[in-house]
Length: 205
Figure 1 (cartoon, one colour):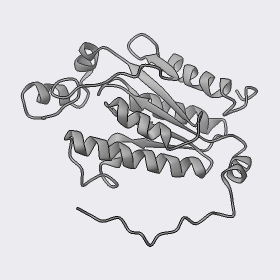
Figure 2: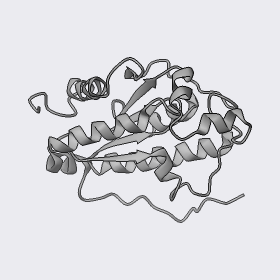
Figure 3: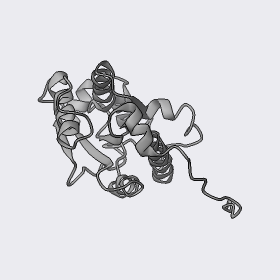
């Protein structure tokens, strides 16, 4: 077991989050997209980022697959590794919020306790959970990466929805039914949420 260092001291920056938000001319927040594999999390997160970028908003997407190529490349898909994966992402998203930008995360993040832990890392209102709701049957029909097929064949253990549970959010800030809405409609719902919360200005279009 690794022992935590006791020789570290938090360094308080002279440039604050408020300073950075003023520079970007909008507030920072975490948009936490969660849902089954194939529910459209990454597609929606990147589409929202495209929209925001085009109106001058500073953003960054943390995508599940991309993060596992680097920051979390040492982790597998056991329950323990999934917990650690989301813990790291939560801490990274918190730092990016301090940088004054809108951070969009696209992770299955199947366990409520992990999502709640990530939420508790930041002040109230800085974590907006967006549930990409889609029946597993539809996700499996899409199966863009062929993962459900492999999971059904026993080639991928602990696959969410097949060999491992997905705990749907009970009170997310937004539910997007990706099997019913067009991508443009889903994007607008997220943008509307940001405007309602005062993250971006309502006059921006």
